[in-house]
Length: 83
Image (tube, rainbow, N blue to C red; front, top):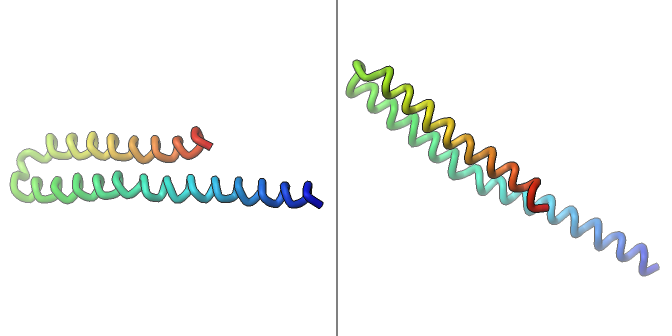
């Protein structure tokens, strides 16, 4: 009887660990999401003010977007690393 109880407790503990990592990634995705919004919002303003610098602004936007998305990917990998 106690072996069955231990199995139930172990299963609920692993279910909580999976849920905790999903919640952690959800919270970690907030930062890159805000960063991408700021990058493209300010890039749009910069293009409206100086259309002749479109190439440089677009290049900087793409680099900033790549760095923000790298943070999001690192966040999802950490959920698998720290199980």
